Image (cartoon, rainbow over all chains, first blue to last red; front, side, top):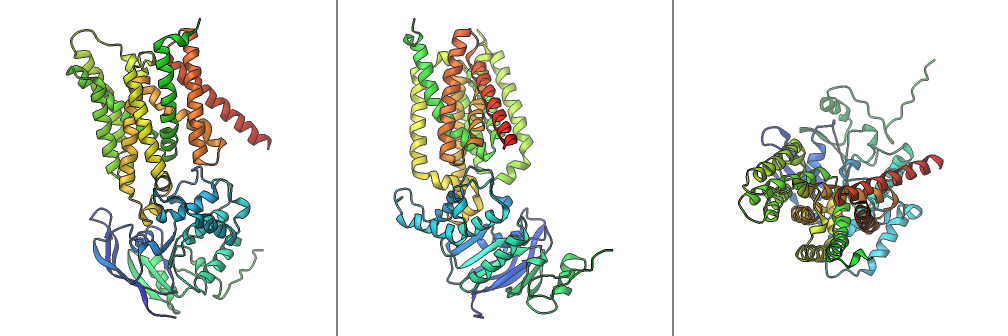
Length: 249
Length: 269
């Protein structure tokens, strides 16, 4: 793996109200073509850390250094709860919002635009539901639409916030495949509290609960997760040994 | 006989048509943003300014305008999280605005105006000046939407995504609430405080389950506003009942019917 960092977090502290530190002294690199998973319990500050990386929140102390990359080159798949699913938008319009960074009030004609949207619809098998409202599609389909929107401008880093929460196991498998292919070209940062979302594609794991407990990828992850969650954690996932439980009699 | 030959009827209908355009657009956006309560707060609090200016012998609508702008600006400057924690404060503002409005109007010496006029408005007293104001507002709103509709929608829909893509979220937020505040005052003058809330919410609620795209929702909300407004106006005229309440009741009955039909359709399919 190419070890050139795209961005480096250095001694980052963050607090919403100036009193309670949500994040304490976090240092973390993100490499080119990295596949970084940030794990930790709910309320541990994962999403806050992600928003700091995206530049949506400003840390009180410490800094984030971006190397030859700008925020416009970030793709972002937010949690389902951050946007209003009941907005009257069709899948097509929804994917189009991914191009908003290029919007100019007086230069509105962009013939590439339609091609770009069509390409995304094709790539994420959304053609059939292109004109369906985003409120009437399944979790897996919405997840693909979110990916299509995030990737429409060929970002250099893709950030995903809890992407497995509202989707079924088949969609999870699809997501895993999509991310694997993407990782051939771009870096991926995924936040999750779901240990089963970690598969063998993952290159680095950071465990965050207010502060960073672990970073890297080796066998000691399980002991570290125990520290983060405060209880024993078992990792079950693709590529890691599968466990088959006996049926109750 | 033709009632259309009276100037006050012509004015009322012209204002109705122009206001339907305003409410169809602003109402759709407000309902989508789930900000109806804030709008109620702006409308009722501005009644305080109206009363104060009335007491001071100034144009009451200017008082309402100042308060609405101040509150709209305040909401626009604060972020959503802060406002949600201060949700109850909107309720206080709502009640306090109404109260001091009524106190000021009561202690003003001389003939006291009918308070019902401000609550339900009086479409029959609309002047050419009011119509001009609404027309100017609509033109500015059109120009703004023509240029910035797309970023505005992305901001309303998903503000973090918008911020990430360089949209000036804070500016859009401020502009959005200032547009709302001005619309509210224009409407108070002609249709009254209670009708402001009704006209902003009823048409989009009728239309929302029927259409998948926001431009369609806005367009149909305008049409539905028109139907409610004109229909209510004529019903009120021929039954000799107050216009405002009749317009609201007409809208609510249509809303219930549409939702009932939607419910039955869903059950059958």
